[in-house]
Amino acid sequence: MRSSEEKLRRFTAQLEQSNRELQDFAYVASHDLQEPLRKIVVFSERLREKCGDTLAAEPRDYLERMQRAAARMQTLINDLLTFSRLTTKAHPFAPVNLAVVVREVLEDLEGRIEQAHGRVETGELPVLDADGSQMRQLLQNLIGNALKFHQPGTPPVVTVAARKCQQDARDFWELSVSDNGIGFDAKYLDRIFNVFQRLHTRNEYEGTGMGLAIVRKIALHHRGSVTARSQPGQGATFLVTLPAVHTKDEADLATLTP
Image (cartoon, rainbow, N blue to C red; front, side, top):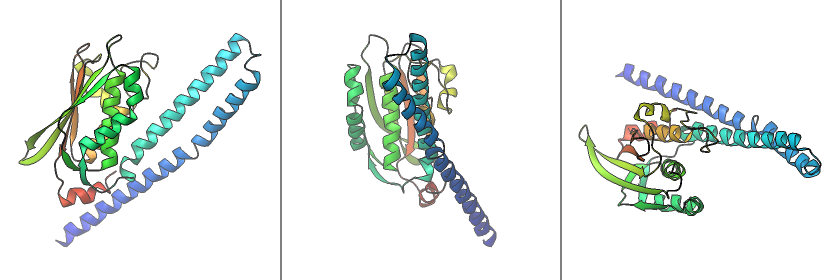
């Protein structure tokens, strides 16, 4: 018994050390990396305002490229911060009404939905044991992706639904986000959930390749899983399976696990 307690203490200490390292990284990313980038943004903007009208076409193009690159770097740093803070800033699990979360997400995405002339349909969604802020991040990433990767000339239609299922005699909820978009080849299924992985160029679709990696990390943090079904040109369905209720040990570890 004493040996088991000692192993648990060592494991907890290792997790806390890992969390401290992630917090240190987040501090560096939010301060040391962003400060010089802010100066690039500020001074390039001043240069454009003071000299933009007098610059020839070629140097003006260089300046605009520099500003776009700085904007991409800011987005990338912010996405890295989001990824690193998923567990270092995690909240205790509590009942989360996903219907309310989806309504809030759709309010945030209202401009994008209108711009794409799309619509989002929702079925009956459950209350489950989770970190509410992470559920919002997960659903915003999945619905945002579904709106983004739509067929040219075809308004996106996104469906959010849920069904109850069982795994190892435990109740789970399978959340699905389906769309009528461009889809992807199933051979890329493992790749799309990795950090910085993109199937399309920035010129085709914006983004840093972090969205689905964040979704996967949130699912794993909740002792769940994520997968997808798709074919090129046939839309995609992303499936997130999460426990309906967590055990006390799982809930305790959730605030420690990096």
